[in-house]
Image (cartoon, rainbow, N blue to C red; front, side):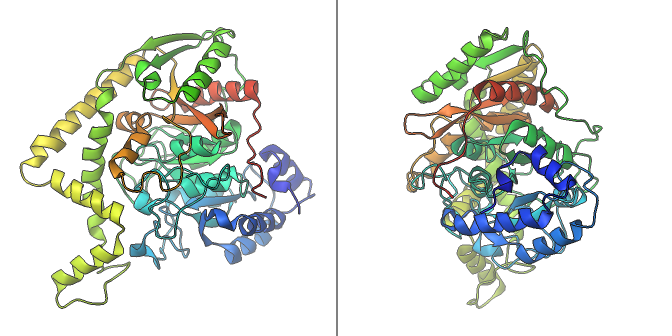
Length: 483
């Protein structure tokens, strides 16, 4: 079997320019890898016919950018014209959109090739990829472990080297947590950096699309392709385009980095803490300055998330009623019963639980008691981060409290699953960019991720430090035995 997809992006690009390989070679190899790793269950819908057609069309075009002809997979809550978008839910099992998300159009403009849609937690609600209507995704490093969620299928596809790239979405850690569990690089951009047009909304004030990749440089190159103002998204930033690779390779000496005590608390697994401390020690020897700090109100982030995110989800998912599109119950005697039966049968248990909590939060006096108070504390957390980052270049800490947990571990404890995002949720609350970077392995061989957090719209500085650490560590991040 060919191994072109194991080459670096730059090597693949050189081969394409020299006509040593063609886009169709990459596409065929990607589909071979999907078949070989089908037990991982990371792909819901394959796009083979269209991908082959696209690859053959590209044979007659000039290789004009670094992403030309590269296969990519898309999380299945990002709409794709004429290609099923299910959100891993029975509710949208047969839904075929009539337009592309803005990010999909941007990928097409770079002549990337979409080979499929990835499995995920239903409507992006979960941290394990076990709430999917299509069954759980397996972790390529240990198939008895969860890959994390909700972008677990995207993380799995990159980690198992099916493709070099995937798009995910991150509402409370849904790019960074699975990236940490599967040993890849995942970035949640600044809120507003990437258009949300065409992203099926979970919590609109928190959701953000972001890149998932094998390494730091390639992550930055994909982010270059998907950012930019979009008039179809009123929250997208009008900032000018920039090259996120521009600081990669610069010396890190003199950088001043904050380590919040929150991120090194007793909730953190000792092996992860020790791994992060070893990175800190290495960077200190290179002239990086570290200081331990406190962030006001950060300890309230998870309960705030449960209020704000679920309130927004309750509103956003009200549109799925069996009338306009999606699943409709077959048995009902009147319109009201049709609504009830459709939503009862179309949504999974975790989604229904979150809708009910969100509806409660938005009911009558509860808006003032819970929701409005939560918004005030969220603003205070955001201000605390902004004040801290005015004094420091970056913040670092753990991505997750543990490495990948066993499949089914939190099946009967839905609340506990929120606390898997203990360290990622604050970043969404503050609208900041955050990356999970693989930095080592625990005693059972499972990947460990470290989180790097930057000021709003300062992703380039995150990439600078991340690339330096990656180069120093030179880890082997290929799961054994997946191919």
